[in-house]
Length: 84
Image (tube, rainbow, N blue to C red; front, side, top):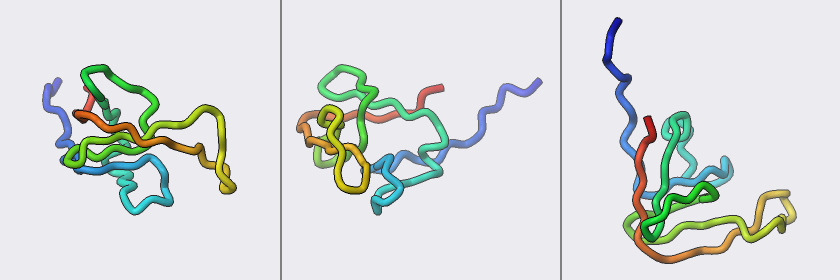
């Protein structure tokens, strides 16, 4: 058996789970991405930007006219990594 893991693509500085976003990256999203915001791991992040220090999370159950969740922008230190 081989212990080699497949090469993972580098995580982008900004990533979105919305396919309509210009920051959507299906190659990166094929793998499980972990997000730590202000020292706590978050599981509800819709989009993040490491260099600008913010994440977007769903604002309750509200939806926009396209059926996508409304989001709010939270500022603070952001870390992203691939979970293994």
